[in-house]
Image 1 (tube, rainbow, N blue to C red):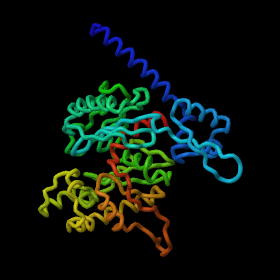
Image 2: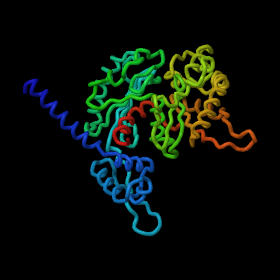
Image 3: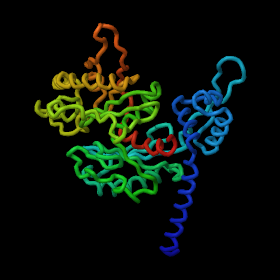
Image 4: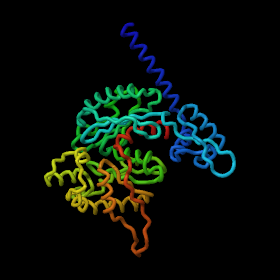
Length: 390
């Protein structure tokens, strides 16, 4: 077989599974409504879907059958409730679709694979400098191909590659203004950098928004349709979930919460770079968020001093979020160690009474229970969200 013939056969195979993928993911807006209603409930009887969507019973039945045939749903054992013959439950099929996530952070670059229900199937750190866009592209290109082969993922069921980038946008799109440590990405279109690197669609989003998406899929989103997410990382960002979906805003910078602080106030916000600087002054050789997570010791006196320093700015943010958004919950998330996020939430003192001393309704303060990195999990869920739930 000649190289030219082999190339033609490879192109033919790619075209075939890309066509299969297009057919699989084209479920329409009504199909997305049914799929999302089932995702948010976990499992549901077909008869209950009519109440959970604006669709007729006949439409729901037809759409559910179509989603079952596509392998995006599965039937589970009936739940017995009251009289009558119980109906089988509909639930998302874990192997119905897969997403690949790439998180570009100030310290490293991580790659993950998730299935349709948000189970983390693979997580690795690339040997690439996060401040070298082309190096990250080439490293990710090789690693994605290897992981797809290693896990035996059906190519037609891979929704795409989602990329998590730190920073805000100057305008809608996939170009960001990241922190100085990864300044080489500044104002560069992320999707263009990864163009043709993968055989799958590529999309990008802010890391805090993707942290909120991960929380929405496997964390607080199972209880609340509306919540705010605090992303406590090298910096201090946030995400918003409204009616079960991330909210981006007009400029796609919604919940860019650090923007409310003045330059002086920014040095007192709950950003891990400030804690790291204080720890170094105290003699601890910690130069990154990764090192902080690895060597974290709850007994360090510096932690209490940092919490005392940042709590006023945190309370300011909590009051702003509560007064403007009125969310059901505010989730303390990001890469900060769990103990640190718990102590921040305990120290917080948001407004609890009004000017007359009457109780003021406020959100529940939650500590994210996501054990893995929320940014890269959210990045892997991004293409699944974009292609099946929008």
